[in-house]
Length: 308
Image (tube, rainbow, N blue to C red; front, side):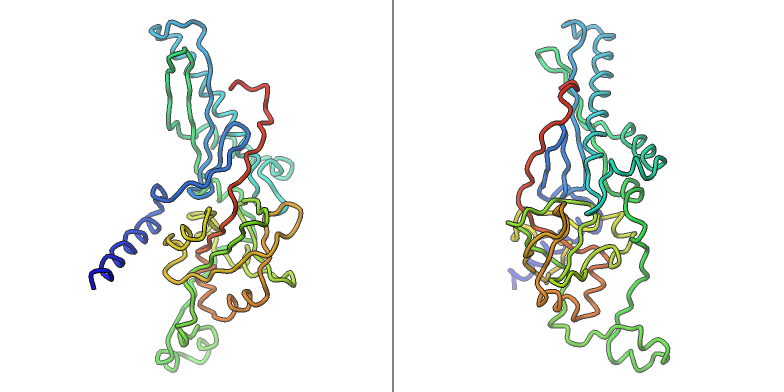
């Protein structure tokens, strides 16, 4: 009995974290790139800029402020470089938006300029270091997510006793809750060993190329608030994540699809399980999906001429 109580307390805590959008307790899943980083677990991007003041007299207010301003400029520049590399889906990166929609890129540039300064240091050797951070969810996600991700109406789930009281026109649109023992609460895709590349809108397909998860399944509200999926390093961590609930369906990724490695192929049998219950559409709509992949490889800094 005590064990059951402890489990329920822990579960309630996890659910509180997820529902509030607070990701501070979740493990980091960081891809280092272009002098900054993308944390795919928390949905944030960071960059650090460092400059050396004109003199080593850090007690001079003018010099300190000038060095701080210069370091901030470097950090914001690096952050923009990092953000541009983000893959939106298998066909598009943020940088590609520049040729497709100048207005969106201008807005992204403004977001970067208004990124939060999360750390600043005056180092003993005279350098000034500033770290800036930008949320990849919320306003940024609203800008870059594909238009085909639309707001999906709430799926009504009823039991058989309620169904007979509904008007005939509503019965076909309602979802039965019979056979609950086979109903899953989320999806975990074990995509280790197949070189998956993180992206903002990954897709899962069956072996025949039919999508089982992607823009058509996702509610835009959930995607903007929580991200379309979350990336983790291992299955055990994923199982404990409240995002996928208490009974997630765990499937194995067979291979990636396309040249970018963002989309994942699962077996037809696993796809059939996912499609077998209408209730599964609910957790897909809410983006209750975790993808377990290998640690991302750090990308080489492409900006050798930018200050460190």
